[in-house]
Length: 295
Image 1 (cartoon, one colour):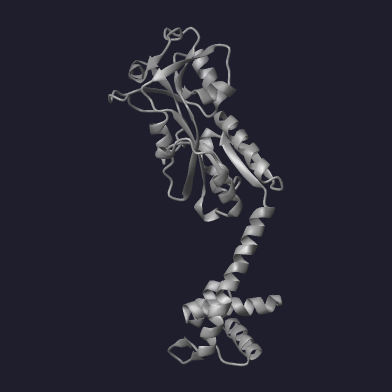
Image 2 (tube, helix red, strand yellow):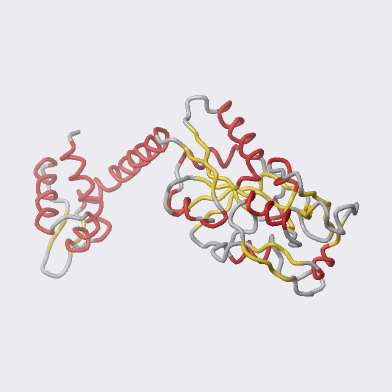
């Protein structure tokens, strides 16, 4: 079947759904006369009318119904095949917040073992541009902090959990403690996140109040993990973070003390619902799910 014939079939299926030449033309991005030409060409090829046309309405003929029943499933299957092949040929790009590099690396390694012919790459994302790379289609999937409450983003599994710790300067009075409770944050000043960070992250992972409702003072915002460690090392500000960060980032003048009273940090996979394809679904299906209740 030639490209022109496929265009005729697409025009037929669209008109069969809309039963209105102007609406069909708008959906196809064609002129109304061009849609008429494609339908007439297909009718000549078949040898019978597909539509009855009057000044007020367009209806399918019995021949049109016969073609619709047979052509629609095949055409939709062809569209799916093209979409899935395009996704297969496309390199899958995984974005991640720096502390979650270990969880991402393990997930990517598992996916490569199961899909050795798939091309996949990773790129670190920034606090100051939290969902920007995903929304600009610079990455296909992002591994980020739970919770995520963004209507355009699909939430996949929580792939890892990390206990909470408090980052303190080595000389801080609490630095030698065996643990710090979240209620004690009311007596401290905590490093702030960038104003551009999502509300659910600013209030969920970096709480504005203790579990009992006492306000937590905020210091100046930071935009990267090394900047946060430097601030903590050189000021009285602290940071409620997780063991995910301390596994990958170190500062000689910063210590990490276990925290009680806060839920663990959770790494969740997300992607743009509008961009979902077979490769994204395959990668998401390959991910571990360690906290199904978090969804």
